[in-house]
Image (cartoon, rainbow, N blue to C red):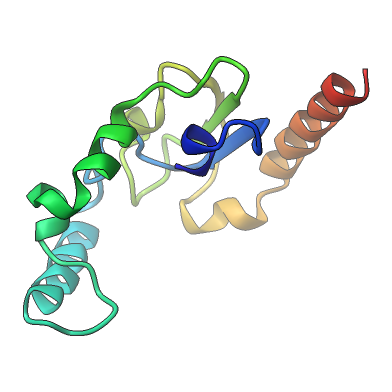
Length: 132
């Protein structure tokens, strides 16, 4: 959202196992947990989202922006794993992004050496782009 709404502040977005094409394309146990949190939010527990976030008027702009294309000057890289186990890897393949497949669990992405190599490459390329 930051990159879409403020493209002058962001040059690249790297998504790690992010099901951007279908945010609820997750393992059934995870979806059950999400629905439980929404149920609590529906009952007024402070700080929690509610089921209205999925269809209510409060989040219309957010839902529309989720489907929007990033400005051409903002680079997108989607890192995904077929062995993720939490999100559907197909839902991570944003059509505007460079796709990079890694071997990793979802939780393991934060400590995966291959992902750090991708991040280093992206940062180097972005630095070259801005420094010239």
